[in-house]
Length: 217
Image (cartoon, rainbow, N blue to C red):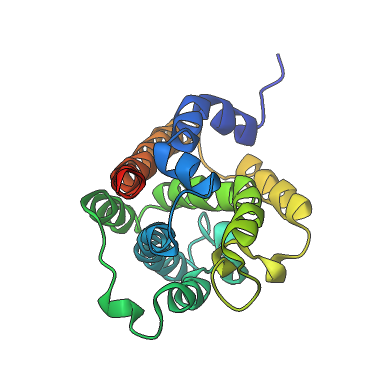
């Protein structure tokens, strides 16, 4: 019996959590154009805190033989998120944002596993593979809704330095398939990926309260 590639096993094992993360009231309201720019900015702000932690972990693991194949400086999102926050809130953006409780929990977990290559890969996969896939549809819709172009607003979703996104994602999956870890470690990575999806879903659930409050106002 041929063993399935780890990238397929990981995707199939976490599909339920992935689908749950996409089916949230905040994203539905956002994609329907029912939220103000400031309410959209709430999500951008939570992304900022999460990616400062994730990309910090990436830098710290750049020399690790297991994690290094998943360290891509061209993916780092902090500068893009700063441009987006400036476009939404202006130059005083830093004083107008704060992490929600679920975001603080997510950031704490990323920092907790930042010395474990498999844990880092789980969170990196959860966030970036989504950004490179469904995130591109979100960007196109937000451009229509809010009129953003290049230079801030939706730069978080732009990966110009990556080149072909399908080719990059295929290479990413190939690196997952080539991970030099045993089956027990792969199962740990799967469990952490499920947790990563859960934590990101909780961030969206909290944002859903923002959406409901604004729509009801």
